[in-house]
Length: 306
Image (cartoon, rainbow, N blue to C red):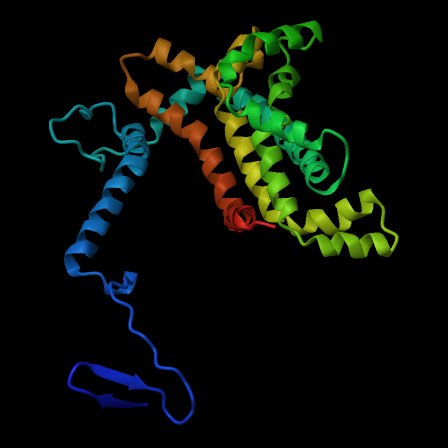
């Protein structure tokens, strides 16, 4: 490309290949062209967010490992214990039946995960792939339930569970959370992102609705299923208010409810409370570490719009 200059301004002339000249955009911004000051500010913000999110966990872990003769209320907080010990975890197990409570929590979590994977998948597939009357109204009702906090419906839930004869049972604890509206919408969005031509080709080949759901739709949304499983497990494992209302037998308490005895009996020993908190937190870390690869894949699936 050659440039012809006149007394006023240079004029760009296309070259012999006929390619038009490229205009340089003014004010273009690139993330790779950050100044050193901007990079420093960004890293400081990342460190600040990291301290807010990871700081409480590290402090609880440090407190649970500190010995009985070590002061945890120092003027300058110390994360590294000078007398590290695991004795507090053993004291928690000796004080409350922590393994029985953990077994109850696992049973509730398995019921909630199974119900959400099956129910949310079926509901999401029906809303996204099947044509029936009032489909948009049903979808709107699912969206409306997300606005209501759980405390609004907790009384009606308890009355329903009691009338069904499921009060003071682990199944009664798991029943209200076995199908979550948010999980249904996640599966609806995942199924909707699949190409419609695949379903149409399956119909031409003679596949019925169940075969399309099992052999075509489900294998394509395994990432979103893992997201539903993680959210369901965390919700069931961390729930405190609902099991406290439903359960009256201490032998059926879940782990979060059973740990309240530590704060009542050992209110002057925060090391045991921290150790109990870490015992309740470890299963969540294990589940997320196991499914994290599928979790991020599911987040990408949910971001695709059909």
